[in-house]
Amino acid sequence: MKTIQVYDKPMCCSTGVCGPQVDPVLPQFAADLAWLKTQGHQVDRFNLAQQPAAFVENSEVQQLLTSEGTDCLPLILIDGRIVSRRDYPSRGTLGTWVGSEAPIEAPTVISEDGECCGSSGSCS
Figure 1 (tube, rainbow, N blue to C red):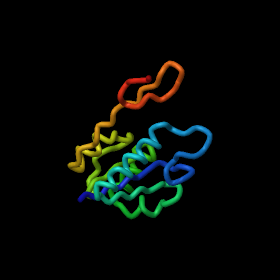
Figure 2 (cartoon, rainbow, N blue to C red; figure 1 turned 90 degrees about the horizontal axis):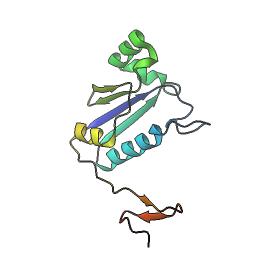
Figure 3 (cartoon, rainbow, N blue to C red; figure 1 turned 45 degrees about the vertical axis):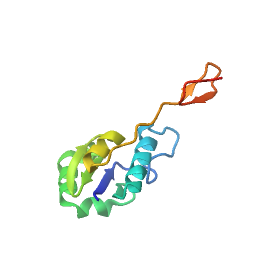
């Protein structure tokens, strides 16, 4: 199994899903990391505002922060190797990197009156 480390920009909480304006990417990414854990992978997530020591302890991360500032964040490392910078990858991309196939979820269909119809597409 793989070890995934996420080095996030400074956020108000560990997931960044609090406050008046939540980046819609963050809840999805948090769910994707939870999915990786269910696949047996170790996932560690570090927030610069709350865990600055983690950023200093990793020499590659520290070097990028020194040369580029927080613009290089988020950083995604798999087994100690940087695989992504400045962006949160999709579940499919994460799955490819760790060798797990991401499940293809059927889209939820919404009827004209806003009622959920399920994945069958039938709103009867």
